[in-house]
Length: 109
Image (cartoon, rainbow, N blue to C red; front, side, top):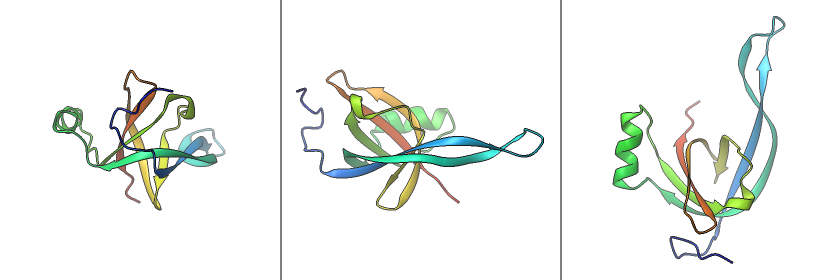
């Protein structure tokens, strides 16, 4: 079993949400809808490192949270929910020790 890079236990719960495209009767994409979800353990941090924050800002993104999860738990989901707050997965970064960092931006409705 690989060590977690932030050296804390995965004590938070993250809901990974798979989505499907929603199209109108003419076939045009009008949004996405949740298709299925599942819960996994994670390590949740509000914000991001200084380097990640500025790299995201250069690309026009605002990273508001970071989570670390096991690589085997991630299936390419683009939406997540933590404590009732919805986030979009902006970037996925492997740690090299069997975990992934998901850099998230809060979804504003």
